[in-house]
Image (cartoon, rainbow, N blue to C red; front, top):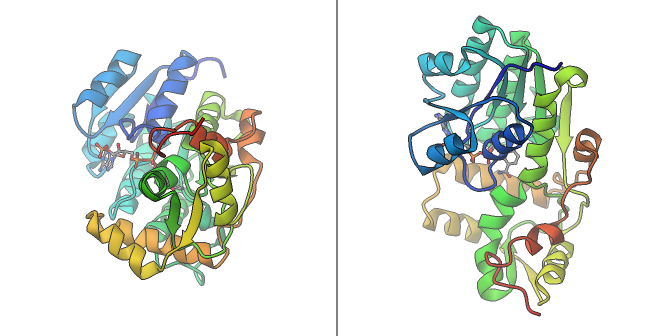
Length: 305
Ligand SMILES: NC(=O)c1ccc[n+]([C@@H]2O[C@H](COP(=O)([O-])OP(=O)(O)OC[C@H]3O[C@@H](n4cnc5c(N)ncnc54)[C@H](OP(=O)(O)O)[C@@H]3O)[C@@H](O)[C@H]2O)c1
């Protein structure tokens, strides 16, 4: 497949380290043409344009916007921020992609979906919507590749552990002694970009992605300590205290409920997962927690020499 045609990347503005934004850069590095969908015209849109992407402004909840964004594209990466309207957006994308006809749709999902069924769902509305989105995409008959990562280092561990590590040398989470194997969105984006660049071997497949090690939070704290060259300890706080903290920073109810479910599943050992998906697709092992923390000394409060 030499001539790929245009690839649409949704959620392309993202925060630093978000999947869509990194996928856009990786495809442009490979000299593949990218149309980047953003929600609004801002500095991030300008940066994407300066990097060489065609930028389209649109709302993933508006079918006419999605139609305009997909028209002329052969391949799609579909992902957007955790939101109460996720299912609405993914079904809209499926309807439009079917109408227009595409060669590949890479769908961002979550690893918890692997354990879900009609009889076995979770209290997280986001996880239920990912499960339903996967069902709808399967019914659509589209050529889909499904990405199911475990918890993100950039999207979870960086924002939710860095302040207490910086200020008190503690990771404060209600994860009990459950094991976890967080994955970097940089690795997730490398997997997505490789699949978009050459879909032949991937159509119809599901990729479960984790980091290189599944370990409890005391072991995770040791990786932080090694990276920062100072002691970082794990404090197992109560779910109620964590919920109060999340509410204090004003997170939307949908996201708070999702995070509380993640904590509950962690404590129950349901994040004790290991796959070789990143290495299988990209040929490189995934980033470890220690390597990730070493890359962000400022956010985690500096490294002692
Ligand atoms: N965080 C984790 O630990 C984790 C783990 C596994 C899977 N996931 C999945 O990964 C996905 C999130 O990926 P990410 O972190 O790369 O995304 P993200 O950075 O949170 O969001 C990507 C973009 O989606 C855009 N967006 C939101 N609503 C939109 C709409 N209605 N129309 C157009 N654009 C919209 C946002 O635009 P603005 O910036 O303009 O608001 C944002 O830039 C979710 O599906 C989540 O379930 C996350």
